[in-house]
Image 1 (cartoon, rainbow, N blue to C red):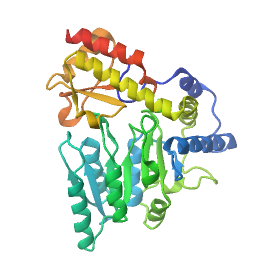
Image 2: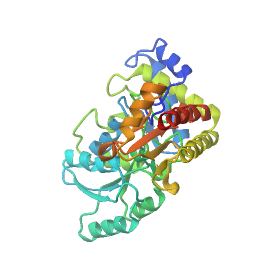
Image 3: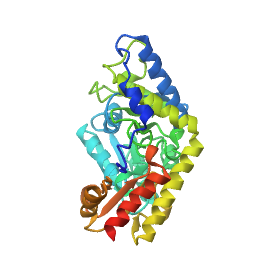
Image 4: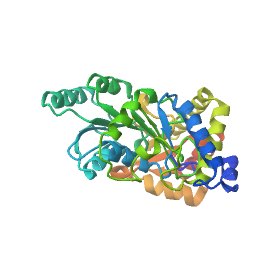
Length: 354
């Protein structure tokens, strides 16, 4: 049993949709109609009036494409971080010859609003304001859910575009998507569809900014997806789109408020069981994501993960980067945000820790 924070388990109906014969995405109108339906359903899940696009490519494509589409050489970008993926945005900016200013804090701390405000004010005073700012809603490697609203307020005050990685929160907890210029998701997390599709809600002013710069790429570029009435930029992943279509139907039929409540219930039970086992959560309670729980097992995470897999046939995840052997993660997102699944995963962990 896979109880990792993505790729998540895929419901039977979603698997079946992927196995069906598919229309040719380059020729048949049936595919274009399905794609339009998927985008419309995503607008509801994003709760946004912005355009939604779904390029073919795993979720990391969205993070890079946001930078490739918006950052010209020499542009200043404010990268706000308290985690591995927040740090990674700075790498993308530099790879496209942008000037990344990383405002970071330790991974167990919230965003530093004073430092962010100071950076924005200093850039404006220098006459070289930031083109955009990047953030991560849920830092999956540490199970941290960041409060974006105060940062978005600051960015609005300085008229700075916002790019947010919401890959592991979208569809599992509310995201302030309508306040974000480029809000990024992916098929394989809370949607519980197979990996292979990026989703993005893009504001009009973000489109305008993309229009104003010279594109450096076709594949890592959102602009060709703005209008697909005359065809897609490249052959789309028709089976993946069919699977995502059904996965979104399942979420919408359940109702988003019930989906969010289900994630909260699963997260609460996972942490209750962890407390009973004497495990410490990471980070503090106010900033834990309802989609993933990170337990703090310094120097033991990899051993425990392997033992649970070998002895109990349950697949958990460890942390990433410097915390790869210190954090053990359980994903209660999407199809796995289920009490029975959580109980089985925690029973397996209990058996090993005994």
